[in-house]
Length: 342
Image (cartoon, rainbow, N blue to C red; front, side, top):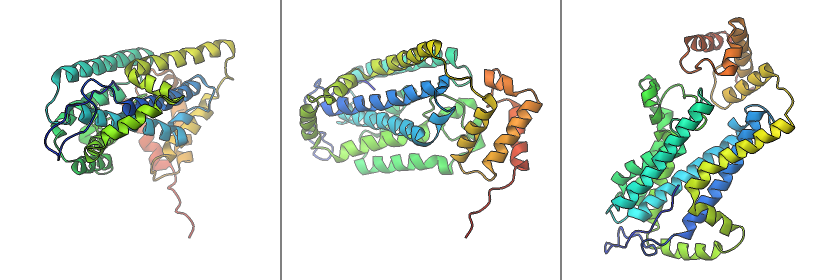
């Protein structure tokens, strides 16, 4: 998320990363990071509208909104991998700037965790994009000299890992950051090791494969970055961590202010719950009818007087045994998904 500086060249042609001299900014990275910030701001604005009831409840968690969120997170992680190789790709880690940058990223991540725990205790961010960038940067140091193609293959394996390696062993909260739990935890921004280190490794690998061309790409980007509106994207990219920390509180505050003047129509909480549940269920393979399952869970929540506490966030959906029992009961009682007609 922060500015990467170019590493000095090396005499080994197999690993040399041809970049501008040390301490000179690479406009291509700033520009791409700035565009990713724009995409992130668009998603967060949509999330805020969803949260305050101006959009259909839960719509930003599925479909095109979900794809936008994932593409944006992947872009930041890819660029972080690119930056790590550009800054330290000769194999000699420049420890002082690395640790300074890492400290800023982890400090910002801790601020995000504390702030979201206060605002959203049931879905606070314990391992989001900043936590991921800091952790993946540490892991990436061990792979700086790995050939580019190998890094890309490691990235592909990381992306595939959740499809094959999920296990109850990872269901403990202490291992949620790994990303291999059988039941994903509830969080407003969850970017675990698997699969998200995949784009990071891909960025490292592609940068190595493009060794010798980075300088030319940077010079072309310098010209592009002088054009409006790309120059504004490059400017935002030069201060990406500050923009990241500031933009969402500003957007959230603006939508909140509008809600005081022109509040949205009062929601039908039960209808919203069923719609949100069906969307989430339909987004993943399900052995039963999502509509029947979600209707069943609503009825059970009402019969046990749990619906209101759930809406108020006074019960933990990930650890409350009653919620687990309702899910299992409704899975067994719901009709199976019918195969498509031949």
